[in-house]
Amino acid sequence: MGKQFDSLSDDHRNFIAEQKIFFVGSAAESGKVNISPKGGDSLRILGDNRIIWRNLTGSGNETAGHLARVNRMTLMWCGFETRPMILRCYGTAKVFHARDPEFDDLNGVFDEHVGARQIYDMTVDMVQTSCGYAVPFYDYREDRKVLDKWAEGKGRDGVGDYWRDRNQETLDGFPTHVIADDA
Image (cartoon, rainbow, N blue to C red; front, side, top):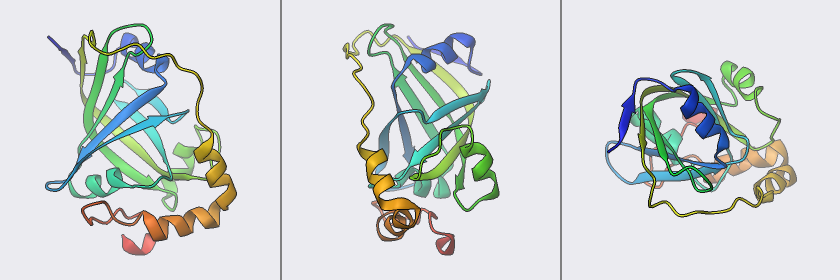
């Protein structure tokens, strides 16, 4: 049976800090539900009910499009290496794009990355833990550098072109607002 909490405890924070991957879930009022894996140094806990995470440029941009329509998000971590636990944070989020004044301050808590596309500032309404007894063991080897090299090769202008060509709509055709003139 899962346990529910109003905010993140020190135990929750420590568990999150140990994980190498987390998953983001979002959905609009209709269409496809999206679940995306996220890795690398892309998440910070800024308070008992506040998490920010940085989204790097990728092939899709579902979360931004979903949040523009229905503001709800779930983050999930699984204990693959040691502790058998699943932790979920449910809440709402503000989306900050590279053009927004808040973006630079929030992005500044991470190492610089040319592919930084959005910062999600999440307000956590509920934390839930469950056993994770059926989650298999996996050993972490290392972070992949493919996305970093791709973004560096494109440069900031090339990444912007990619946003324009590939990241302006979700799979269901909802605008993502990644480009200023589509807001």
